[in-house]
Length: 316
Image 1 (cartoon, rainbow, N blue to C red):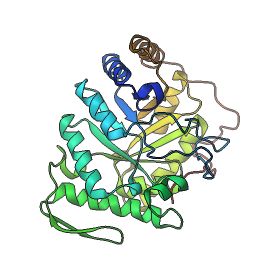
Image 2 (image 1 turned 180 degrees about the vertical axis):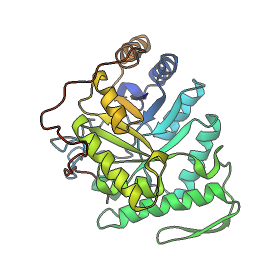
Image 3 (image 1 turned 60 degrees about the vertical axis):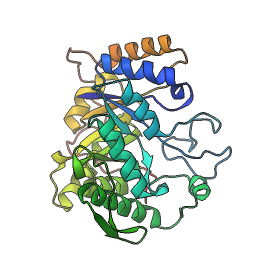
Image 4 (image 1 turned 135 degrees about the vertical axis):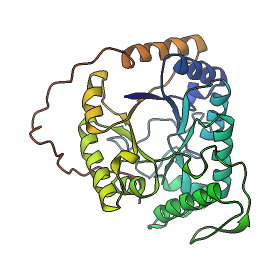
């Protein structure tokens, strides 16, 4: 089981000295990947419901520092040499796909092929309005799918041409190319069935965020169904989950369910030395060579095939 760390870019985790301390300590202690999320805009009193908390509110204060994830990860890449990097997630329909294709390829080259592009469709109508991008209707999802297809075209072809509903270009050259070309890993974030369908049809992995351990097997079953429906082996996709209630003792059952990476979410302390100690304690808790016993069987767990339950998400 791989262990990732989602701790950079927000609040104290946006300070350069803390980023450097967390990134180098995470690499030294065996974390597989650093994740960094995105919001271009936050507002003080949003009407949009945040889909990853019970009360529908995002925990990050609107006035907190929130770095651009591609720039933050570029900084982390410069102070490390082995640990992988991923956006978790970049809100793709808010961006020009030609620019994102170039930025992602640049970061992949600068990190020697350690970058994965995590994308999402977004949930904040206020953010989309500030950026001048339509939010309502089904255009947001179509825009996400089309932008990813256009970016794959740019990574694979030189010159590249594309004509779609939202973007078009003809015989252009966008370089550098990612070190892995068109197969630069793309991970789709979001817990909804639409996000899982997008992962199965267009991406290389799925990232479930702030999801309960009890919901993980059911969501993976939906992902497997979508893969089967579209003629794709489920084993081709990576499965990363950031848990709302997970413990190290849950790792065996998550592995059995098909999870390939558990992402630990946290906020580092403001002092670099304290941040190193914080990462060390996380590693001591989550990364151990001994086999952990499986947690007690939950009441009602009588079938190996998870029962379908509705899970709210933000994608369309």
